[in-house]
Image 1 (tube, rainbow, N blue to C red):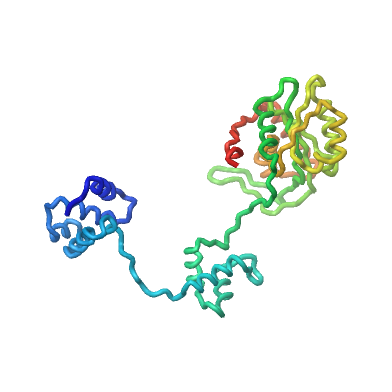
Image 2 (image 1 turned 60 degrees about the vertical axis):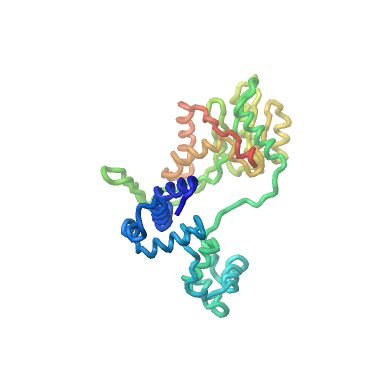
Length: 347
């Protein structure tokens, strides 16, 4: 038996791997030793812990099939009990129908549904679904929206403001965080101790909600925040813009970055902005408020205060939020903008 130089290199690589199927690795080793001509079938069998007839059959098959001899031949096995029609019935049930009362299919529900026509067990249905790579128990959210032809241009405008802020003004990212719940635990929280984490009561009491509007100076990271006195509408938003106008040096222009929320695009808001030309607005693309940098501050607020906070009243929550902003501003630093825009270019 003769192996070419390229075949020998491939067989040696396969014989030394630990990730390939063991039967293929052993066959490659047997064929390498057989090509050396130093051992007969019986010696090769003892060397590789197989019968001599196995060595003879492998060498004979290699002479006919070549490297295909490394792989098992197709085996007939037991005839299929369920044909293509049964598999198509499972496929149609999963993709085109819904259970009578449940929200999703399970193996048991599919077996009951198909019992009159197919009579397949839940375990067999599971094997069919695995073979078809169908997972009806899983769901993934997505946004069904028409393509925005201006998405790239609008996103680029926001990124350009962050990366190259104008010299004649400040870049301000503004947004609201609404319906923040003031909740307190029914029983006191037990403090952390050695070997035991903090223990927090499961039940809580709701004390109303608070809505926050905040503006962040992108260059410094400092935040101006106010509790919205009532509904989140254009009247309260323009009230906050007035506060912002008063707080910033009148010699500077204000470059606002904000999303397309109803209070930001309302007729009254647009009229107010038109009457105050020092405000230059850049809107994020639709469904892309994640480009608004103040959202990063809202994430920090949630993680450090709101998620584990205990608030005895609406006023208590409002006071603690404003105090958090005050402490944050003492050591505020700009967020490092690392987004390169590569996914946008790919899209």
